Image (tube, rainbow, N blue to C red; front, side):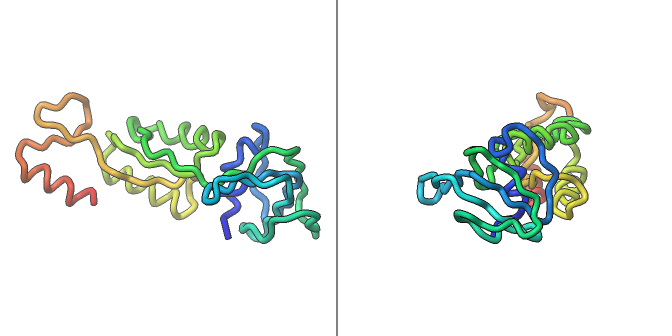
Length: 172
């Protein structure tokens, strides 16, 4: 089962650019499901989401009190991950970038050049994981590391091989 965010938030194309608030129960009619594992797309069908998970996919599903949304042949995509982002380049970048990722169907990001202190990056990633902040899911990979004097403010400076190894241990 997939989360409701997978079905709805990653479906900016599904929603035709319209943001629909996440609902506990939602029946999406006339939707084409992208099956990336099989490399194909389904004919139009219905997608029933109950209690935040996809309960059924098929034709002629019954709403049973669920909000009904007509996708008009648009697509439901699997969770998308952008593995090359820089959302921690300033203290407020994530505030605006996260919404833009979601609106474009990206429900997970891997930050590659975090210039915020690592503790701050970890705090934000934890708040996303706990649901206190809106998705996308955050994967921290590292921060910028350079030799002194550094080429960009906020970079971690590793003057020796041991400094570099310590930074790898710290961020792993």
